[in-house]
Image (cartoon, rainbow, N blue to C red; front, side):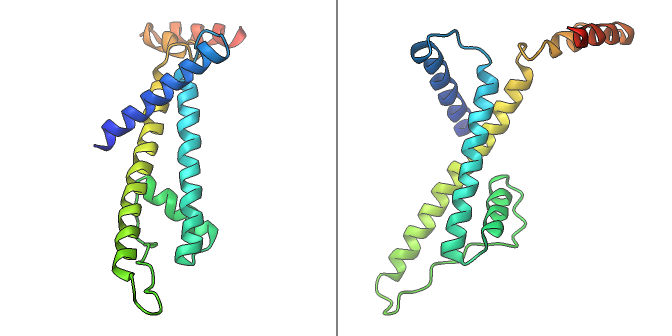
Length: 160
């Protein structure tokens, strides 16, 4: 599910970037994979920062602890040393079960979208690395099995 959602997010960002290049800037879309990787990285970074803010206000963590929790959670490392707790009950206890339910549902939705965004970022980085327009790196390494020939191509590439 996360993989499919990540692909859809990356495709949506790529389509949006192509649209912006063609219709708004009147240019031919170039290096879309690299631009997609940058945009998805910014989105992932933003989601980690938002989690950190919620961790500060709802859990009483420091901002750095919130950033750590966001990074560990959204990269699926999940050490378990920081865990969001249920919201504390209201003074009179009225509405507490509904409050916990809303908190849980919102957490699940946010973390699912966050995990998909991080997966999308990794997929976009992979696509950017595979893109042939990245300074011809793949053309040098792919078409040559001879080590001396690779060295010559790399030297000539560095001189340009």
